[in-house]
Length: 120
Image (cartoon, rainbow, N blue to C red; front, top):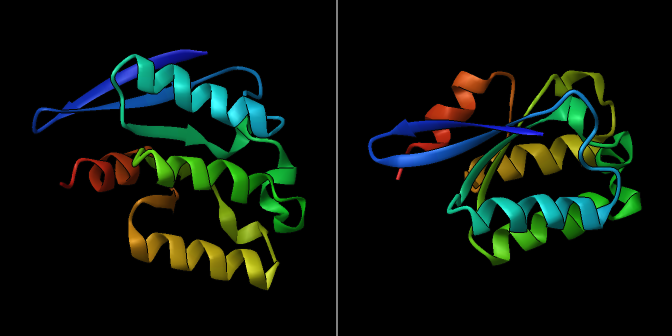
């Protein structure tokens, strides 16, 4: 796992770059969050490809547990990927609602993630 730092308007955003999946279970998501927060980041970009597909099946509870911690600790997160492939109405509703709140975002590009996360 490598961290690429983007600094926009004096705001530091961590882009997590990995060749392997970094989140397979709830504890992995919390470890990533804690590790980056400890390094001073409260805005994070993670790629969909680096997250277990079970995350996107809301019945597993993985997304809920991880994203609740991000919200509780006020750490903003953007997940970059192609979410059109998911046909679950509940997931699509969850993504739409998350994107409205702008704390947890599901976006199609890193540039979009950086733009959203650099807003105050």
